[in-house]
Length: 449
Image (cartoon, helix red, strand yellow):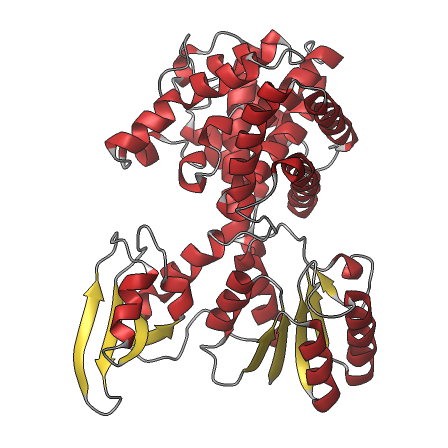
C-alpha cells in the first residue's frame, strides 16, 4: 500500500517514516514540499492514504495542494488524515487536532490502514532513524550500532539506557562504515513512545524574534485551550464551557501588551521556554487545568468572577518555573519524585516559589494568584515538593487536585488515545490520594454520563 506523508516539520516527518517504515507492506513517500506532493499525486493514482500536516507553506500555494488532495481522495477512494485546519469540517477525512502528539497521529494512520500493531513480525533488532537518535540527552533503552560491511559485521557498538548521545558521536561511525542504528525488538515500543511524546507539533523557531514571542505564545495558548476541550469531549465529560477561559486568555494578552519593557523581557523569556517545551505539554496541562477548575468552582460558593480569574491565571503560571522541561512538568507522585536526581529535585522544590515571584512582579495579577501557586504545594514559602496533607483551604486543595488530575489526563490521553478513559484516571487519582477531598473527584465523575 502507498502512503504519502506531507509534513513540513522534519522531526515529525522523520518520526512517521520511522514508525510506519517497519511495515514491509507500506510504500512510503514523505515530503515537506507542496510542489513535490502535487507532482507525486500526478504520477501515482494508487495512493491508499494521505496525511497532511498543519501549516504546509513550502514552495507553492498550500490551498492549491489541499484542493488537489480533496479531489484526488474523492476520485481514488483514498484515506485522508491530517492536522491541517482545512480538514476540520471535511466529512470525508479524519481530522486530528494540531496539538495532538505525533504518537496519536501514528496510531490513527496505522488504525485506518488496518496495520496490526499488537505484535510486530520483525527480527530481534529493528532499524531506527539515524536522525532521531541525534541529540538524545537520555536514551530510553539500549541502542545498538552495527558497523562494517553488510555481509561481514565487524563490530556492534552498544549505548546503554540513560546514556547521552549526540550527532557528532554518531557521525564518527559513518566513517567506520556504519550500517544502521538498531533497538532490540522488545524495546521498540519504548523507543517509539519516547520520541512520539517528545516531538513538538508546534512551529516555534529557537531564534524567534522578541516581538513575535507574545503572538506565538497566545496563538499556542488558544490552540491548547481547544485541545483541552478536545480531551474533555473525547472523554465524554459534559457541561464544560471553554468560552470564559478563552476570554480570560485574551485579557491576559492585553495586560501583557501593556507591561513596561523591563517586565516584558522577563515574561517573554518564560513564554519562549513554554513554547519550546517538547510536545507543548505544559500549555496542554495548564489549559486543561484552567477549563476544569473554572467550571468546577461554579459548584461551590467560591465561584465568583474574581475566583474564576484567579484559577485561570494560576493555571497559566503555576508551572512557569518549569517551562521548557517536559519531564519535570509531569512529575506529581512521590515515586516519580524519588527517581529524580538531586539537581532535578532542587528544580522541582523551588519552582513554585520561582513561579510566584514572576507572578508577583506583574501588577495586573491579583495577589491571590501568587498565594494560590505557593499554597497548593502545602508549604508556606513554596520551597518543597507537594505536601497534600497541609493545604490551607478547600479552594487550594481543589486547585492542587485539578492540577494533578490535568497532568494525568494529558499524559494518559497522549499515550493511550484509543483506550483513553477519563473515568478510570479520575478514580485512580482518587484512590492514589486516599480519598482526600472525595467530593471534588465525585463532582467530576458526575460529569461523565
